[in-house]
Length: 169
Image 1: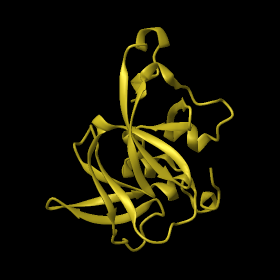
Image 2: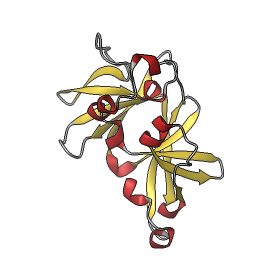
Image 3: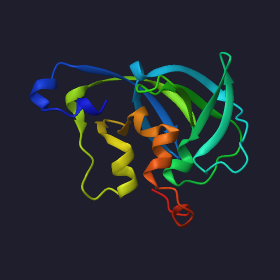
C-alpha cells in the first residue's frame, strides 16, 4: 500500500478496495488484497508476559496465530468484550498474524489518487504506522500497511517501552 502514494497524475484511474476498520472511534483502512481472511468477533488467549501490543494467540486453520492488539499499538485503553480479528500475512516470511480491532465495518472503493501523505505535525508513532489518509465525505480513513503491524516489526521499533505505555495517539 505504501506504493500508492505516487504522483496523483499517474494514479488518477487506479481504484483501491479498502476494508474499513473501527478502533477507538477512528476509521482505518487496509487494502483488501492484503487481508487473508476476517474472523469477526473472536476471543483471544492472552500470553503471559507478552508485550502490551500482543493481544495473545488464536487458533486458525491448524496454526496458532500471534495477534496484535491495535488499541495497544495506538496507546488506547483496552476494550471490554470481544473484538474482531483480521488474518494478515507477512510478505517476507509468509507468516500469518492477526490484527485485533474493535470492529470491521465495510469495503470502501477509493481512488488511489485520493491518498494524502501524513501531515508533518503527526505524532512520530503514527508517522511510522500510517501510510496517509483518504479524505471522504464522512471523514478520514487512515491507511494502514500490514507489514508495519507485524509483531516482529513492532518489537523492533522500540515504541512500546514501559515509559511510553501511557501515551495515546
